[in-house]
Image (cartoon, rainbow, N blue to C red; front, side, top):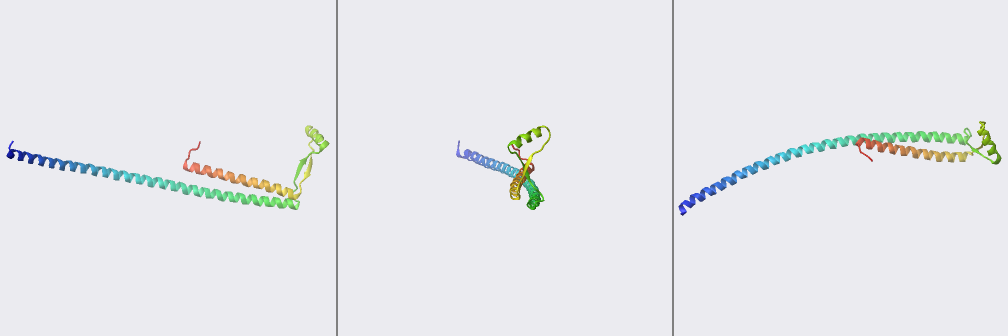
Length: 170
């Protein structure tokens, strides 16, 4: 091959390579643009889904917060009412308007009381508590009642949050 025949062939090959390279670049650019559009659309969809999920959770949080606040108010009202009732009872015990007694047994009387109770004639010996002891027992019972109310409020709050967020427990 001579240089005169080789040059046109080399020129054609170089032009073909440049044309191929350019066409490949256009195809690559078109593929990249399609991928970018698809990614942008998916990002938009994901952003919208995240915003909707966040709004749903915030709505649930507000509802749960309002329900918990309402339950706390209800507990406060229950405790205030119970304290008022306990105070009234304590005043009645101290004033003598209410007297507390407990059943007692004493030696032979216990056997007699048991036989009488078995025969259907219930007569038991009772001992009256002094007002200070009655008030102390009432305070202990009141503390237990308060603790029970608080624990029930905790259980209700737990159930409310579990049901609100649909949390599955085992």
